[in-house]
Length: 226
Image 1 (cartoon, one colour):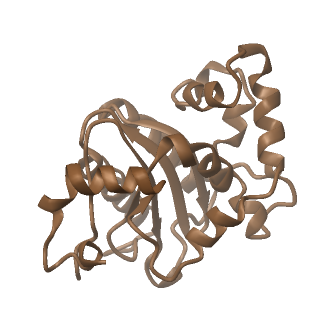
Image 2: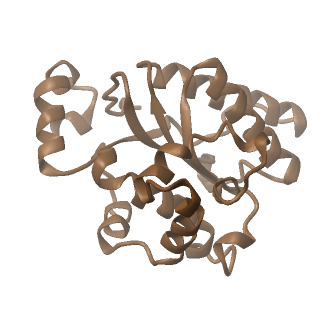
């Protein structure tokens, strides 16, 4: 299997996705979803990763996270590996759970962070799994509208500050924002057959190419040629 393109540096933002092997379920019952969320919480502490949004569907997941340290690969290897072990023990199965290496899209936070939070939280609505965004349990939307301390591990303050600098108005601004349809641009990006490894403005992409890309050129990484 060819290696995916990974551009990793301190403070980078990523939209991370993975799917079950052959489209099979990776979450079969409520306990599986809860176990994965617990693992995300544990991993955010262990690897000092800031998870700003997540959505768990029956056969795939979406994460939006920032890495203050350049440790994305180690963190995701931990999450996918530990969850696979847990799932196989629970269902007396063996072998690979996910279809392969996770997809990590490097994100221009200034241009696309808010759109990605909305895209991730609206995933169940687009998929027909929920009529309204608040109807779906297994995503971080509820954390954005809750003041319960148990959700403090979600890195939402940064996102809410982008929506509205006034603390008292942030939840209202968020609720209004996520009721709007996803932009054509973000839908078009994720509908591509081969989703690019970077989502950002032309200026952001040029900066990444000049600063981080030359050392990533490799014949076993087809995305680097693209």
